[in-house]
Image (cartoon, rainbow, N blue to C red; front, side):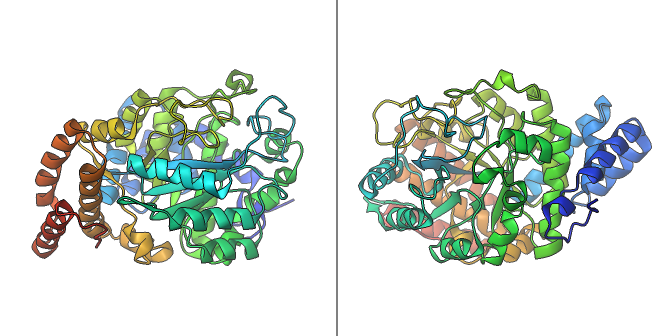
Length: 473
């Protein structure tokens, strides 16, 4: 029998099944104890996060007044830590060759009617130029797990190609990597290649379900997969991103497991997850989400987003184009700090005039252009940010987290967001978007607290208007 130990490096101990079962029983027993719920919310107001057990009580609590208090607190914490900035990125699918048998993903090996494709370096260049021509500055690269078709050398070559392409005023300044669990040595190579965040979704923390959902292939090894973030940290990658695929297992179980993983990273490495992604299972080729009986409603999804923000206040929270415009509009105020824009989830999709569907990993609900997404965010009162400054200035890992936890990251993030938005407006925006953006920048300049920073920011903005690029704090 494994015992629960957040400092252990064994998956069955830091994501301990018995501990989660006991946590859910505790939450059920105390969800109507409003005195305890209020105490937990009072603790959450200190902005230092919550344990998986306390947060699970809040998730189980259905008292309308307390739920509204949770939402209000999530909004305030989001504002305190991240202001009104929303970072924008795009996924780039390199290859859909895969040797795994994951039953929820159309890339699974037994799917014979999806065309298999792997980008050449020339095709990677075409994709990157198409993304640069939209205005993107940060990418998350994706690839199926196939040691022969997608070895680490291929991934490293693609990263090098992406960073090397300078087209007009375009440049990809940060490449995050979402590839299968690998070795410490390979993580070290990714770090040396200059990646930003290493992202790996757990899909489900319920081990028995995990083994059923991943019946064949290297991903079947639950422990190797779940312990990947520790190997990444050992390899020198200090920004890692977690996530579960909500709808595969009972959401309360997943929520507790996700928070336990964050607690484990803090306990062992002194730095929690740089990001937590919130994907829900969606329709795709050969995949019917209704086959999974644990899917969640929009209301529960919103509550999960709010409670992740309360429980892990410093983390970046990501919502992809899996979600519709309406759902994104609902959850962004509750804690989301990063969204994808104009995503294509097919291999080689950006270089095509029409959105291809034959190699998509999942259906894209939000199919608007990047210009439309930027304009929409500004109309809602947000600053679309293409900033990559922290990563390039070495403010990663514990350095980023210490600034974030102290509420100091906004002193550089706010002006950096305005500078990168100005670049977008000058180089890529429609006239309508540009007009809205210029007004927003003018107004937001006065929200920079330090006079000196504000003056330097104004000077940088003027220089961007004159054609210079890439200023940062």
